[in-house]
Amino acid sequence: MEYLVPILVGIVALIAGIAIGYLYRKNEAEKKVGRAEDMVNSLIEDAKKKAESIKKENILNAKEDIQKLRTEFDKEIRERRNEVSKTERRLSQREEVLDRKTDSLEQKDANLNKRIKEVTRQKEEADALVAKQLEQLEQISKLTTDEAKQLLLEKVEQEARHDMAVMLRDIENKAKLEAEKKAREILVLAIQRCAADTVAEATVSVVALPNDEMKGRIIGREGRNIRALETATGIDLIIDDTPEAVILSGFDPVRREVARIALEKLIIDGRIHPAGIEEMVGKAQKEVDNQIREAGEAAAFECEIHNLHPELIKLLGRLRYRTSYGQNVLNHSLEVSHLAGMMASEIGADVRLAKRGGLLHDIGKAIDHEVEGPHVQLGADVAKKYRENANVINCIAAHHGDVEAKTVEAVLVQAADAISAARPGARKESLENYIKRLESLEEIANSFTGVDKSYAIQAGREVRIIVKPENIDDAGMSLLARDICKKIETELDYPGQIKVNVIRETRSVDYAK
Image (tube, rainbow, N blue to C red; front, side, top):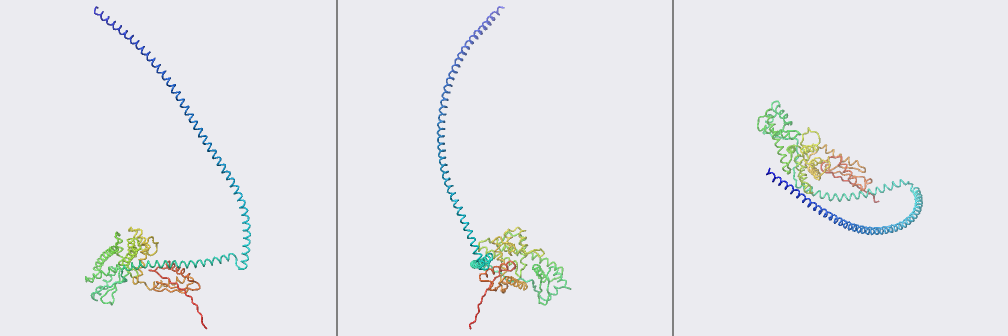
């Protein structure tokens, strides 16, 4: 038990130390808390003092700002009052001016009313006087007012028509002189640069024979060879007394050419029988097809036209075997293309378009006759089918005036077509059509009032009209010529142009006794 005593003493001493330390620390803590409270109270007092000072300072600043704003507001109020007073003075001045103007206008209105009444009274007096004078004039002239007006209007109309005719004649003469001079230069230059053949095509072909014995071989036993040849080609063979010659007759130039080539090959071969005829006709057909294609390519190359559809080239080549009034259509198309291109270059138009439209303008004539429709419409349709330019289609559709020409090039194609067709020797015309055209010209001229006689001359290129001098004066001749030209253009189809020559003659006869 003795060793427990020191331990107990140590424990008691430890507890006593802890208690003493705790009491000491507590006392120190209380002192620190007291000091902290004193410091906080001091800070609070200082903060209150500062807050009071800031509050007073802010109140003073606010009072100063309020005073300043009040001063500015008073100043602005004074300025606005001054402006309002100025405005009121100006308004009062304007009111005074308006009052004075109103008084003046009222005075003028009263004067104007008086004037109107006076003018109305004078007008009524004048109307009464005019009516009285008109009544006296009607009694003197024995004409009513409407009749006099109608007479005056007729006279004025006659004078106006006379003046118009004189002016129209002068203008037309000047325009014709200038236009004809320029057009003549362009046409002459184009025609000089374009040289074309004028040989007319025929509807028959002649095949030379080595001897007359060959005629019998061509006819064959009981005519079987000639029948086989005519059946295969669709062409009539005329074997007559013409020495060493056989005539092939037909209106289809392609078939006639096939028959000619086949017959020449048969004559060279010497073996003429139905089977050989069919074989030779087939070979001739292929040869003509090649010639057609080559002719189309050559025509396009000659006119420097590219990118043509192959079918158009074939149709172009078929024109080599087509004729119009005896004129070869392919040669005609080439000539039209060259003429249109030359005229286009002279006036600054599109040369390529003019040449392309000129070359294709008669392409409708290459289509077989089994297809119904005029060649103009057929040509436009086939060009549209193979996607030609719209302007080229218009050149084709308008070259006979059936459709309005939308471009200068289309007009040039019209002119070139007329030039090519109207050249002396270019085309043949039947006697019946020739006489009918002359009679139609004279009938159109005689249908106008005042025409005494008319004569179609120069193969229908000119019509001379003799008028009655008592019905048509010199000025009216121009109007009559113009009206006749318009009617001819409307009712007749003709190549080239027709000159209308109006003649008026007056004679005065007396006798010396």
